[in-house]
Amino acid sequence: MASRRLNEALPEFAEELNKLLLASKEPELATQIAELTIARRCSCEDDFCATFYTQFEPSTRPFRNAHCLELESKEGMIILDVVSTRIAEVEVLYRDDVRQRLRAIFP
Image (cartoon, rainbow, N blue to C red; front, side, top):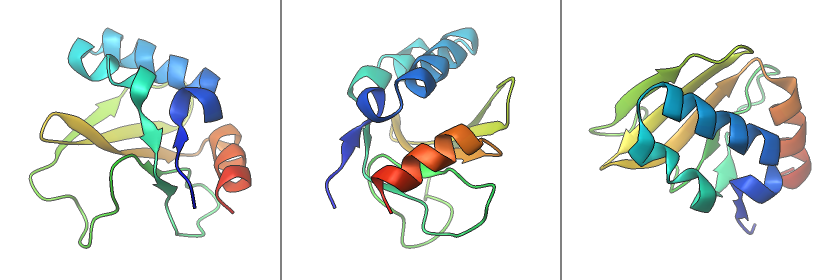
């Protein structure tokens, strides 16, 4: 299955993520949003999960040497796994808008 750019697949969420990163004083991560690609969505079937991977899916959870960054979202939860200064996973919970769109793109 082909990957999709985040700002094309979920433009409103990409903009939200960019603003949250800037508000969290993470401008280096915010610059990645324009080029961030959704490689695949989480394969769990939890009805609250809208998590997606941007680089690869780890063989073990969590990513090795990952830095986790929880963002202050007004809706749901957003936690980034950052590996070697790159966003590797965007854990999105309790966001039906993101979940529905992801499942449409990656059935």
